[in-house]
Image 1: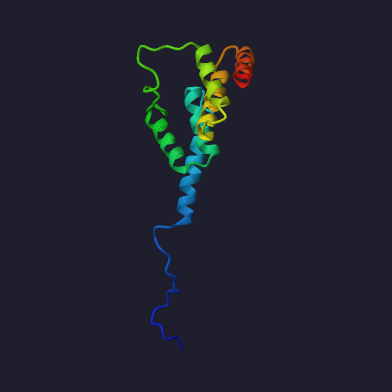
Image 2: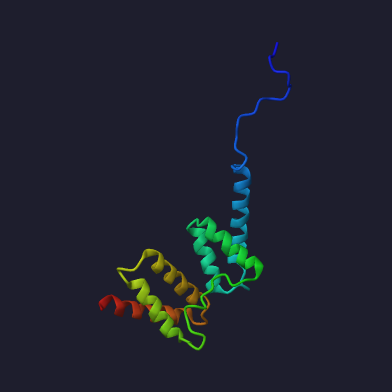
Length: 146
């Protein structure tokens, strides 16, 4: 005969805050949405590259924020502080700056990786990617010599 008066099965003490099924579902949902945003050609290529980077580096907090911004129609990355409103730089100057950042031996790996991603998205959105890639190769070889 049982000592318990209840017919309900005994449950272990599991904290309510850690429901792995719910957490995985949310993570999977953000991951699926991120993939959809990366493939969405209506979103600027420079912004999609940041979503791809956060996805590839498993940056959960960053990816969640980037997806939230994209879904809200906000700029994914606010780079307005990088240039003064009257500053315009040519594609060649942009490529030279990015190549310099990438080729810096003393640069932080995160900064160099981000510069490489921006360079890749610049090439991807270019009308002449092969010519630009060749130009970057020459810039990089000059930077490596100096």
